[in-house]
Length: 116
Image 1 (cartoon, rainbow, N blue to C red):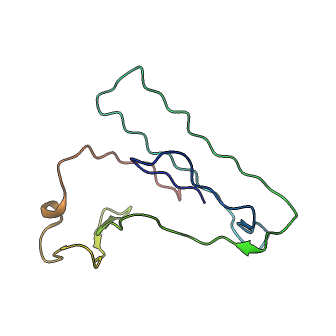
Image 2: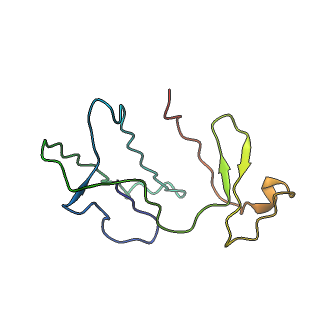
């Protein structure tokens, strides 16, 4: 519904003519996830992320689906720690090589599972 990523400025949100249908036969849960990165542990930094959900009985002309903006990752690591690969046309990912070969050194943080 809303997406922001490193290097982006401002907010991306839905137009007035579109919305997410919420009813008995639609979504049961809403997950709000914030990724915070402060590798130097600087105390003067803070996060003021938020999420505003407007509920109305006035249906919008268009339903919003899932839209991905940006570069698609070639690697997905799922909750049971198996590594699945998804080949993206724009990468040179070699599925026969070990996963570590494709990862650059970085801080990796494990977050809680959404379905618990």
